[in-house]
Amino acid sequence: MKNANTATWSGIRTVFLDRDGVLNEKVPEGQYVSQWEDFRVLDGVPEAVAKLNRAGMRVIVVTNQRGVALGLYTVADLQALHTAFARFLARHGARIDAFYACPHDRGECNCRKPLSGLFEQAVVDFPDVSAAKSVMIGDSLVDIEFGRRLGMKTVLVMGTENRAPGSETAAELADLQCSSLLEAVETILSFA
Ligand SMILES: [Mg+2]
Ligand SMILES: [Zn+2]
Image 1: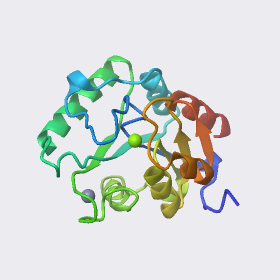
Image 2: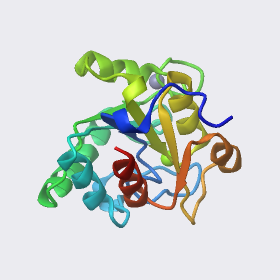
Image 3: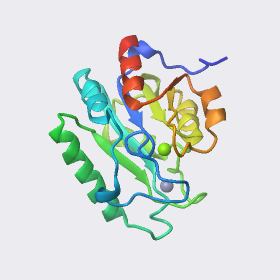
């Protein structure tokens, strides 16, 4: 039974996006993107985000960044990267409302997806956000588990390269599968 969650497509108000593999090219497992110079925005991403903006959807990024815990980059590096990405999007008429990142290692926090802490942080900043009116778009099993646990709709973006771990299971669990963020957004907006 695929649609055991409570959300309905027509009521979606907030779109939660994973970062790596959805907004930018995923690098091989165990590698991390830590600076704007290495951040490759995927085709159609500014257009997809702008479409969500025009539809009045809130757009929130939730990303696991264990590279901080591993000492590969700092929270300040992460913020600088997200600021540069936001500037790039602004030049294309697109806006992400907020970025939330888990900088911790496995098993030491409640905010590493699939745990729900990043959603709870978003609700503090945007109290009208409700899981039942949200969709999670990601490329990994943890993204789909995160959304399902909270009762969101879920969309798996299946890239062709550097496919995320658990993607077969994720494909079974997700409400929808798409090949890109743009396709996911167009599908969601067609239901709205
Ligand atoms: Mg990802
Ligand atoms: Zn965390």
